Amino acid sequence: MNRQLIGDTIRLLQAEISPIAGIQLSLSPEEGEALFTAMEGYELEYSRKLHLMGIFIILVQAARRHMECAENHPDLVRSVLDGDYLYSFYLQFALKYRELDLVIHLAPFIKRQQIRRSHGDYAEQNLAAQIGQFLKAELKKKAHRKKC
Amino acid sequence: MKLQEALNIDIAEVNREIERLVTSDRDVPGGSPLATRILELIASGGKRLRPLMVIVGSRFGNKSIGRRTLQLAAAAEFIHAASLIHDDIIDDAKVRRGSPALHIKAGVISAVHIGNYMSARVIELLSKQARNKNRYVHDLSAVATAQLCIGEYQQMEHAYDYDITLEEYLEKSLNKTALLMATCLRAGALSAGSTEETADALYAFGESLGLAFQIQDDLLDFTQSSDTLGKPAGSDLRHGQVTLPVIYALQDPGLAPRIRRIGPGSSEADIEDALAAISGSDALARTEETCRRYLEQAADIAKQLSSYPAHADLMTLIHHFAGRDR
Image (cartoon, rainbow over all chains, first blue to last red; front, side, top):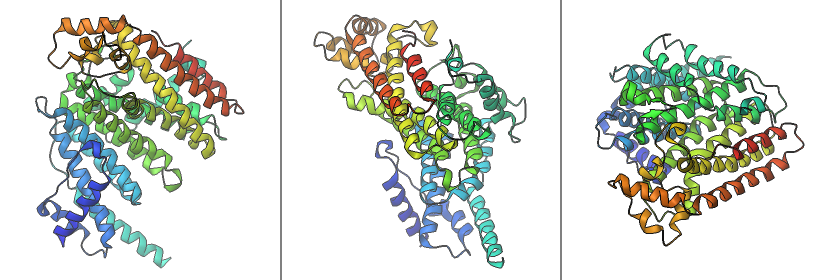
């Protein structure tokens, strides 16, 4: 199931990514594990999982491309550009699939990650946990609305 | 007269708003290397064309210019500045506005993430005010920046490509330069409550004006000194960028071989020879003529908006762009 979700998400992303960018996305089931865990217990529709996984993959890959940007990296130009494109593609993708609230939730997290990295702190941050927090808050909001 | 004076825009207020994007960020301590680098970059100058366009656009709405428009104007400059930081890495440019480029001062990986911070800060600020009814706000941080990247990919794909067509050149220029300007005008207008129709006309105006701007930039690379440009003259050709003057010069069978032999490993003498050949041909005059046609196109669109008092600002932009230093 998890493998299928990653495969379907990659196919969706590749269909929407600009062909001129020529970016090939990938994610191993192990890398997706944290997000699968974060999405558990929320009764999300398959299409929603697809969109959340899409956002996760784009952001992981964007950060990865920019982390490759060492002075003497042979593909430096490509890494800068791919990272830039993926960050803007993230927004386009999230807006298209009505995940603006998630964009708002993730914005400070992504910004702080950039701040840390600009200072030379390259420790991995838990993006999947952030998405999990968002889903929790969303569920709480829905439950509150029902009560009212 | 400076453009901001001709447009009656308080540029100091715009600059303060741009600085505030960093100084009001609680996650960035004042005096930190990140804050210092960004404030230095902002203080190093720049024409602030994009913020000016947001403000001009806002004059086509029915609301007076408020904080939201100013913040949008500052965000437009942040997006532009972030793209310049990354452009300098991509182009291996050592100098920006007469000073060492940011990646020279801070290192490549740090500069990449400083640029990312600027984009992420814009998203953080704007996404809150961009609920579905204000999606235009995201046109700045999503659509326009994606197009900037696509323009870069196209430029990379066509490096030293002496068979690039005029259409391919124009598409690249539209993506790299014109669409952000067009988006600034449109977003400014919608932020002040303009109609969609007016905002779309402003977008079309921005596309034509932006293309004229890019074509002039191509010309300046041939006609201005390194001191004025803040980078070596002729650097476009040196980096394999086949700009409009080169495209026109390539149509002259006598010149084409001298240009076509330029590649990544060409000698300085061969490059100087090609630059001199292009400068001595009619390619620059033809490029100017094309630029003028885009400015006329912009003027035609501006005429459609002549019922607005701010129509005069569009003409000011055209006159300013027509008179850029040669």
